[in-house]
Image 1 (tube, rainbow, N blue to C red):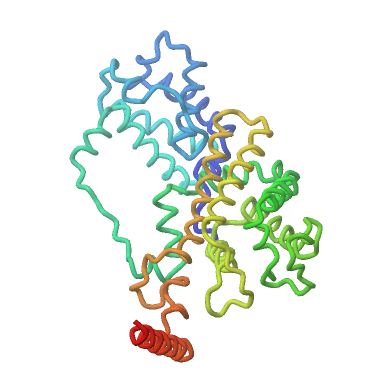
Image 2 (image 1 turned 45 degrees about the vertical axis):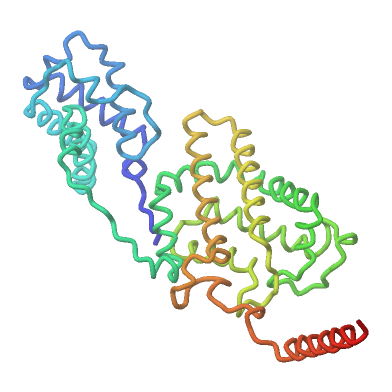
Length: 371
């Protein structure tokens, strides 16, 4: 099961269902409720329905709402707790009239009460008196457990269900552009000898003949086609997969196969500078692809932000195999957890160095005698 649940907005049925709820909320209940109907005398109810529909949709996890803040919009009304209680009561009745489950009614009402606190200005008061809570992050797990590490970084960059939904909302439209993006990546890699040289090494899983001379290596070579297929599948997974434990481990594997760590079949070791540059290029190309879809501005921004967060999460998986952070933690990730050959004593090198030193001493003695 995905680590990220569906939003209330999506589960409830999106803006269409919310609009029906709000229509019923006003027409059947609010405008006939002696506790609050006086506040709507002379109000443009069509506009009011639209405003509340979008506001509630946003509160339940839907599209961003650029409307006026709740506390500012309501501060001139001198509303009391009993007025907000009436609003919540009427909303719950409207939800039940549309056969919304009791479990879902409870969740929506919880969100509505938070919105009422905001409208009454109580949200700021509660925040001012609320004790600061600090979530504990286990450093040992950050450097040894890829799923725990991902969850920490995802929470830090606020990658959540809304971002997964944003990505999936354009998955079908972006799928045909996948091949264009992949071609653009490999055309870029071929631009520089230092990056194209990494393509001359055998990739993990590739069993065909490897062209090692970059002057003969072409974008249509078998080993490049193999890599292109892998990148195409990678993009497909970003667009369609649930971001569950299996996906997290896949993102970690993508990073691992590019580094020369013990136990890996291939000996590819791409320096981090090229990984960083490539991820930057992939992001700019993805943003270009998203802009070609001609989405509404708010939708487009949500999609771009979602892809930005995903690529930062992927970048962290790469970084952990290169950085020295956590080298003091047993069984930590990457090359930094293993001693390099250069730090080991080499007997042959020591003997050669000693012999050279002896020769130099003898030559110096001979030179001194001649002087």
